[in-house]
Image: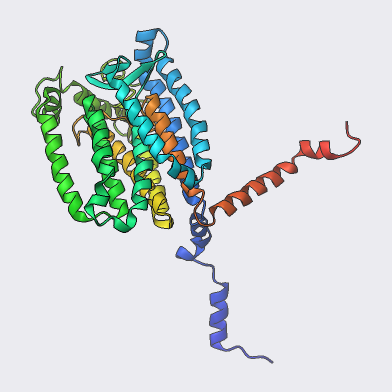
Amino acid sequence: MATTTPGRVAGAARTRAPRSGLAQHLPELERFESPVTTYYLLLGATLLLLVIGLVMVLSASSVTSLKDSGSVFTVFRSQLVFAALGLPLMLVAARLPVRAWQRLGWPAVIATMATQLLVFSPLGVSVNGNRNWIGLAGMRMQPSEALKLALVVWGATILARKRPLIQDWRHATVPLLFPVGLFALALVLGGHDLGTAMILLVILAALLFAAGAPARMFLTSGAVMAVLVAALVLTSPNRMQRIGAWGGGCTDTLGACFQAIHGKYALADGGWWGVGLGASREKWSWLPEANNDFIFAIIGEELGLPGTLVVLGLFLVLAYACFRLVSRTDDLFVRIATAGAMAWLMSQMMVNVGAVIGMVPVIGVPLPLVSSGGSALVTSLLALGMLMSFARRERGAPEALTARVGVVRRSLAVLPGRLSRSRPGRS
């Protein structure tokens, strides 16, 4: 009769024991580490933010649209048209190879700066003191939004080629900062749009940081830019009023403080769970730019804390996907361009949300993918399409995507309708 040693019994028990803790979740973790995870994170978060944005634009703009045009759908219809235009462009951008994006760098930056010059022509349109739009065929376009994407693509192309010489400040700054970067900033500041200019500065800094520029460059250029921004603020009464309203010294509750105060009123009215979708009180002409710069306040009012956390969570998903892309790629151009696009979208989100909750002064930048504005929406979708094209070319991603398409086609091939059509003699 065979004997069983205590060691064998213990070993068998260990073999039969169910996995617990982290071990039982290894299949899920392995799926999360799939080469297509980054692509699907970008795609899913983008589409969800776009849907939330369309719903909230309809809600936030309904009252003012009815007052101005007699229809509650005027602003929403325009946003829907731009979304219908931007989504196919995003899908096309997601299919472009990396080399195509590199070739687009110089043509894109030249074309967008030439278009930005048109704001100083008779086509230029001023809105709330900013001359940063052009009017064409009854529509308004904001060239500086396309300039953001052009700087990301062009800057990444230039810095990827200069990587061996990046420690030399002359190669790090020419032509990225001098003359192209400064010329782009001058064009935007010429239209009095300080908010967009600050986002362009963030993009340029992120590109240099991702390329490995020396730290002393950031100290010097940061000090120069801080002095420049301070001078622009001190010489503008409107900007000084915004700084005063943010600092708590504003007493003009019907003037300079009006928008910031009513943004906080909207969040306070929403409380924990919100007043309900479509039931906002502040959108009844109390909160200026309710469907644009302050749409986050309407989200908080109607959907409460859960609604705001969902929006912020989706932006964090985008940031994490960009971080995965930067850390997993071996292509220097992809790494620099992804860092620039991530800095653009995340800094713009933080400035917009920070202005609504009172953490930063009201600067006037939209919430990406959520605020109304066709130029910003289309450009953001194009930028995210570019990131998706990078994610589709992660190591192992093309094969995984091809295999999934094959599985879908085989599944469709056995549908009942196709089976009946494939059988001879059936009518």
